[in-house]
Length: 69
Image (cartoon, rainbow, N blue to C red):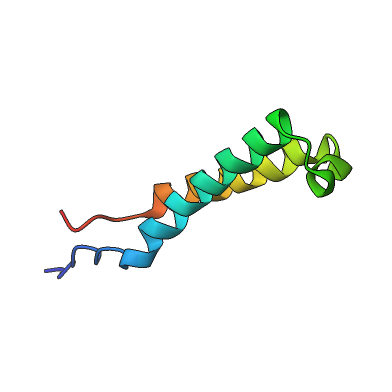
C-alpha cells in the first residue's frame, strides 16, 4: 500500500516571476526593434540571443508551475 501525495502548489512568486519574464522579454524585443537605445543597440544581433534565453526561462517556469487546482 503506497501513500502518494499530490504535489503541493507552487508559491505565488513562481507565477509572478515567469509572467514578469515574459513582459520583460516582450519589452526588450520591442525596444531593440523599434527604438534607438544606445546600450541595447550596442549588443546588435546578440539581443536576439538574450530574448531567446529569457523566453526559454519563462517557458520552463511556466511548465514547472503547479496551480492550486
